[in-house]
Image: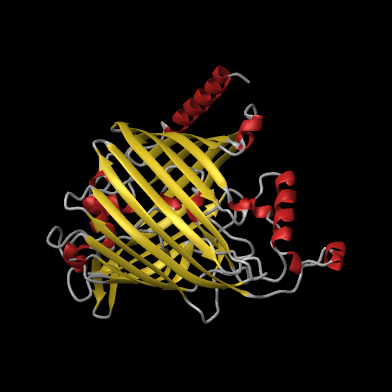
Length: 449
């Protein structure tokens, strides 16, 4: 198929989405904007979804407006029914609908319609002054209703303004950084979703635990320290970002060992540039048997290649009887691992640039006593062509000299059109630089009200 034919197909799909969304009401607003009578661009920069300094302060403060900018929350959002019962005057509920049309590079004439892909119900905000909550759960195209993706309670301004905030529950530990679930693209950046060997751990997913963070005196330094369960291959399955393409499926670990996550960032005085460092230190009990690599592969041929590679890496775990019967090898060692990284956000003229570099090291991810290391780099550039039109490109690469099956390289140019502030249309071309036949074109709609 020639390039002109592909362009015509893409344009026709965009027109169809525009007609669908043009009948929606213009006054639909997310819960926060509805509660405070503000537009989305109060907190977001022109290069949406980037938060401006005011938006960052709101998020870090549990969706409370800065001190002095509003009546106390106890007067604003609550009514006293009796001396022993106090209720919210209104429930801060928002609904987000995400849909996608996807065309594979190999079969671009037959696009896959998946609309809506996911419907999210979100509720959050201050309950009392300096006490807030957030909960998010989704319903998917297959009718499945999942356990809450996010569910936590926060306590703010402990010991002084911005000095310490505390949250407990299920949260995304990259929430203040560059989580996939807030990306404009339907495709997931693989840099923070690496899973090594038999270890199911993924950094960019939802973790259960406690998190201490703060920005003392609303200054340039932001710190965060979290103690979380980690993940395991056993136990209840939980969605870490949803079936809509962001995050990954994980299971919460229930052993006594707790993982540690820490991050420190510095915002330059002009508040336009931020640099940070992070570290995650964990330990996971590996499941019985050897990883097959199926979840990483794009085709049967790739799966066979990856199976052979893992078998070669851990020959001691296999026997002829195991191959003959197809049984898993009984083996349950522990894998201690570390992830270190740096990240930065720069705002140069009208460009927003975000990048990160991660280094991961696992001591025993295959169960054979051999370590595996990998590195990942991610860069994203957003340029607001107009107030309601964004052009962007993202580059992702994961490389490893120890396990080639981890290696990935993608280039994703995309365009995002804000039909309304809360109605978005997007088209992206997710280019697999290692195998262009595995590339795809995604068209997305995102509606929040």
